[in-house]
Image 1 (cartoon, rainbow, N blue to C red):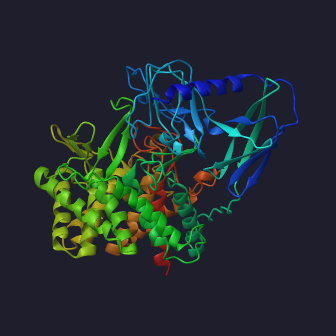
Image 2: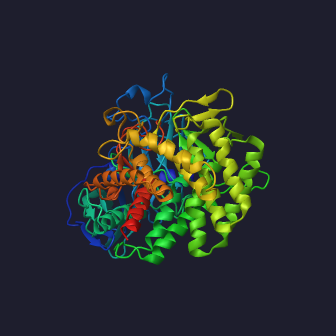
Image 3: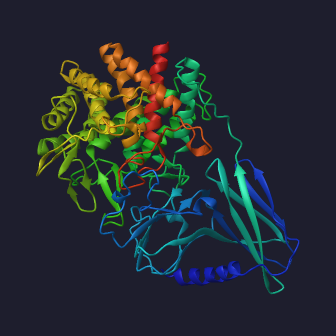
Length: 614
């Protein structure tokens, strides 16, 4: 904190200049040039001007979103904010530029908070209470950032970047590097001349040179059409990667893109990137996709995602989840840790291992991925011996396990079954079988579905028939069948699929709650992409064409609903507008959001269709 006062005084001086109206006129006009993926500002000033102050504001921050925002599409707005409403708020400023050395991020509030924290899920720091907040650039994330404030009356009035730029012989050159295909904002350049403050304001609208996005023809599963849709989905995944080397989740994927807010979100949802790794690797085997990345680059992107998962493991040998990577930071305004909850889950980790680490081992030969999968399996085994059905999460900040397990944890067999496939060690085959039997014992139902969960104190939590959640259970059954084909798992998977086929809509999708109408529950874009892939797998295992027909119906719906609107960042994704648009009813419900793992399962389903076409 030694430098805080000097920084504060310096920027108060900057703000004094920037807040004054322009006095008089000069010929020091700013020219804007587009050079490759950058914007370059140029001007020639009088030689007596030795420095200028640059203020940059993105149009994405003209309206900064917050956790209590209520979508106009939400059919039950009363569910968004708890009652009584907690006296706090969480804002989400957007960083959509690659920050230069020396830039100073600034947040202006309407009043002085009693408490504030910036990206508190990563940086456990409490700051002095001021109305103007000066942030250290290395604490900023690309795209979504989190500003926690108390009381709830505190509002973000402005968020921008300031930088002092020295001039040599009056020559001004300044580069802005947008993180997106399109960028718009305002740049103000202020300087002193003849003891007067002059300000030049430049509005910027920038679009990179883009490859043409062509939407496939509807109801056409020809190889050409499928490849075009696959290309678009994979490009969406590629754009979703976190390229900020200062970020704890560098290399991972931003799980969501929020179309309403025009920002990527949730780079800290680690497990969800697993299917994207598999999709990127498998794409290297397909010719004529014409992707923006070559084979080596695709493998490197997948490897960077996998490496981030390895780097986020708990490696304390005495810890109860030794060798398990962070799963996610759950969000809810009621949570005590500044709106976040730090979760580690063996089920999520084995999902990541099966979709990501082990395919990377097969592709790259890097033994660290195989070793990580084995260590994770050993801890999973230890916890199964202790609990039977492993608790859903270990909460890092509370230092305890949850008292519940939900149906979605069934997908943990993905990693265990894949580990058996790689090693041929019967130890992992038996572990896969035991893991699934513990779930069936507590969660199976006579109609083929699973209950929503099991609570240690109260027992069964009744199924809500969520399409996506049941899909994760189905994935677990199919993965277990691969490892233990003599068991009952394919029969159980077919029984669950048969029930889900009764609820598939005529256009091919499912509602978010499978037995509800689309009008009431919204379409489940995540669930439909997932079930399309799972039904292809069910057809492969059973040779029953009814599953292939349903898989193709779902795939056709996904192709028809692949985003090709005006927001270039979202192109190729599948848009969800429902209670769990961004996963979890407490964060951005009923806003239009695309998801990386939806695009990944969509891609994997498209590749299954291509295989059949051969």
